Image (cartoon, rainbow, N blue to C red; front, side, top):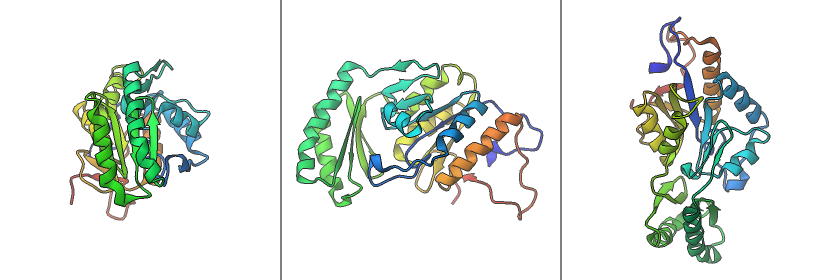
Length: 273
């Protein structure tokens, strides 16, 4: 586990922990609204946040309001729409710029006619971004990409970002890495070592920034990545968060496994083949 497992008695760094939501804290669903949130998730994240002295945040392509709805009554620091929206740890909400919001509305309107021809597609307009999901019609990937390119061509301040069966339009200059960096400039994240856990191509920016700041990116599942560590699945993410929270409570890193019969580590080097 590299930096996360050292000799017993080594003092652990103070951690700032960031995670994606879909595909990381919860399993990906066929539609955005069909996500199943375990009943114990909110309580578990609330406990983890307290163990990390509230230096715990969700960075997601979803809107902040979506995360609040899924994790109710918990209200964590959240960066939504890839950072175009952001709620600080003190509860201050940084709203989307009015021009960005209007441009996102225009892009959604330009894409809407495609859904009239293909109702199996899902258009997810957000305040500051637009996502077109084709999970239920993967054969339409190229058609989705073409219409999103045409829509964004009218708004040069937006860029396209492909994800898992989704193409997103987001404002240039906003990504999960810039959101992580913004959190790290504020209390209670300031001066801590960042860890970012995610599963998708849109998480690569956050992996990169976390590692530039002396922390670790943790990629869930297969695929090329800049993250230095890899984790297997959503259940392993929950186990890792519990383990990191326990470390934070003890202020001490765990011992490395003593022999090959010990339980396999949750994490492995992402560069290993």
